[in-house]
Length: 134
Image (cartoon, rainbow, N blue to C red; front, side, top):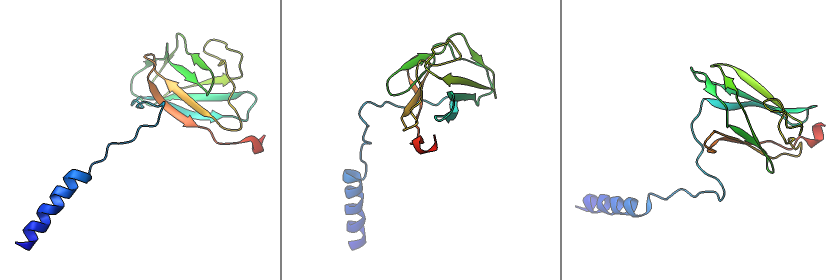
């Protein structure tokens, strides 16, 4: 009987205290599953650049997708990425469609975010401080 009471108390305690709601970080949202991912980022180059990779089995229309640093957002226009393919965008602040973003990547480190065409976060990467590498 003592064993049964112990198990009953344990079950009640777990049901009351065992499940805790995850804490959301303010300003962040859920990150969606996507075949498009940032593959490489260079923050100490001339120019800096971001490479995206399509890890899926189908082509993905990137029109309306966007890349952002901590202060600017840049929208991709009229570009399709084949399965297994890569595309590289210069991050040199020149804002050339499908070639160069309207921001540079800070060598001191910052957050880079990839959004889909519905403005939902696909991926976020915090680049490390590379200023001593320059």
